[in-house]
Length: 429
Ligand code: GTR
Image (cartoon, rainbow, N blue to C red; front, side):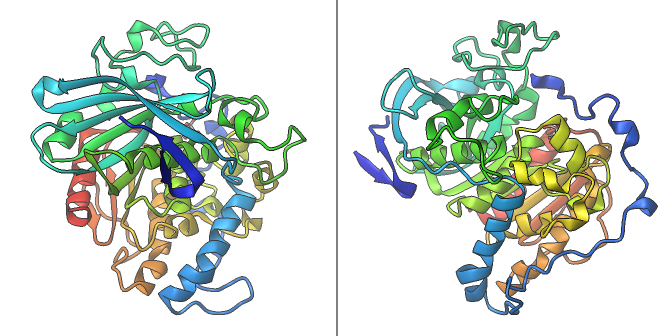
């Protein structure tokens, strides 16, 4: 039995298609006028809580970084679950010639408790068939179940809770045949595999179902130490999903086809908030990519542009910790902002992607979040964004950080993947 990082052991290894991006009746009140963005002061990344300046990478790594992680645990996402789990894996399927012969595709069940009836997550793993040796890979959660990523009837259909969806015939929160391939256009599999990368994905609902039940379901239930009332900084769903990504990385560390030291954690929208938090809390991720992550992700909360802290907490009370609600309509009181979340990726490469029609996510706020993470990259002698002027549409910037704003809506497109792959070629090769 292999003993893995973070006290976890592994034995053996072998549609939401159209997510409601703008909740009805809420978008109308949102501010989309740049001239009405409040004046705000961003907390200084390079000053410790006791007021000392941080002038060396060692000081950042040895003290300030942990202070910033703690701020996000206390005021935004809550703590990640800490209870010990026993990861066991079982190979469910192995197809040597998936994707018209391009890829080796595996489905691996990861049991999170010693007994088979407990929670489990299903890893869907693609690796290029013709590459010898271990490959770098992207790891990301999906919204609809692994069967939605590729329209192949042989793929295991998720048994976890899924959101009801008329278009896909989902009633009673159970996935249907119509969900097969329904999310395929968000995963540019062929391009990823042809570029020599692996792709690993998991249905996010395997880790924690995306609805508010007072944090009783998903892995919360197995990892909470006492049934006592929740504390203000107990993790919400985003912390649970981030925890699941780290457990997937534990498993990949024993994989013979994927190089776990070169795994980029990726996510879109609520899962882009999650990829930033996963990258912040688990420094084993070699690269962090956040697509259209908006409020609670890459965007600066103090701008209160598009979706705000108050709105997100009311519509999705289970995503964040209870303390986060103190900042509803009160963003300026936050002792942090999301440039600090992005900076937690440093010195690893981080990519933030926006879409111009995704105003709800505040593209400018996402850009500025990355821009203001810059001082930490500079501290490491790395190149941050060169200026606070947003690039033109479809003109990516790639230094030691990456950014683009593309035409179109809130989504993950082939264009986005093209850029992520270029950035990965620059940093993960
Ligand atoms: C929206 C939410 C956003 C974003 C999005 C998504 O409804 O307001 O913060 O996360 O969902 O995940 O698609």
